[in-house]
Image 1: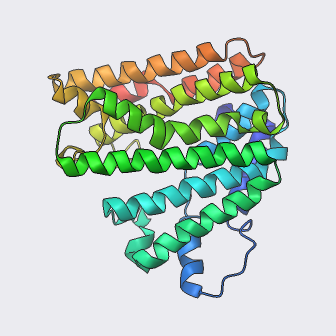
Image 2: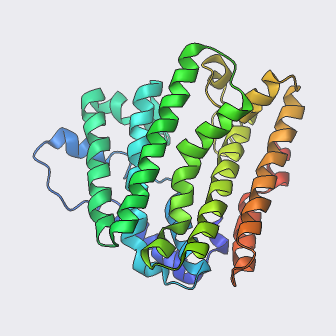
Length: 299
C-alpha cells in the first residue's frame, strides 16, 4: 500500500503500530525460546498492509484512525501467526529476508509462537467489543480452512482450477483483508449497509492483492521486492498465472490476463464504496498500489 496517499492522521496511527508492534505484547514469558520465537517476525519490517487498511476503512466512514491502533496491531498479530504456521506447512526457510521462525527456533517453538500471537490478538481486540472478536475469529477460521484446501491440493498433485483458486484466495487472503477494512465500522456499529459495503470491497481487494502478489512472484522481479516463484508450479501452490497456463494460455498471455483480473477486482471494490463520501481518497490510494504499468514494465 502506497503510504504517500494515506491521510496524515492514518500515517500517525501507522507509525504507532510500527513503534508498538513488539511493545504491545505485554505478557511476560518464562521461556526465552518462546519469547524469541514470538518476537522474531515482529522485529522485521513488513508491509503492514492490514493495519493500513484498518485505518483506511476507519477514515472512509469518518472515524479517527488513532482510536484503532490496538485493533490494527491485533490484526497484524493474527496475520503474522498465520505466516509462522504457513511456513511450517510449506517447509519454507526464509520469510521477509530472514530465517523463518521454525527454521531458526524449531517447529515446536514456532507453533507455540503462532498460538501466543493469536492469544494476544484476542486480548487486544476484546476491548473493542464482542462483534469485533467474533469477526476476527471468523476470519481466522476461514484462513485455516483455506490453508487446508491449499496444502491438500498441493499433495494431490492435480492442476488447480480457477474455481478452486478463487475459493482458496477468498479464505486465505481476502477474509482478513475484508475484516481489516471493515473492522472499525463493526466496532462503532456503523450499520449493516456500511459494514457490508466495506466487507465486500475488502473481499475484492483481497483477491486483487493475492493476484498482484502472484504476478510479481511469477515475474520474479527483485525490483518489486519478490523472489522468483519458480517452485509454485513445481509444488502446485496456488498462483493465478499458473492456473491460466494450465487452461492453455501462454506465459505472457496468462500474466496479462492476471493483471486484468487484478484491475477488475479493484474496480469492483471501488464500486462497492462509490456511495462513501471519501471515495476519491480511497481511489487515490488504490490507484497508486494497483498499477498495471508498474507490473508490465518488468515483463
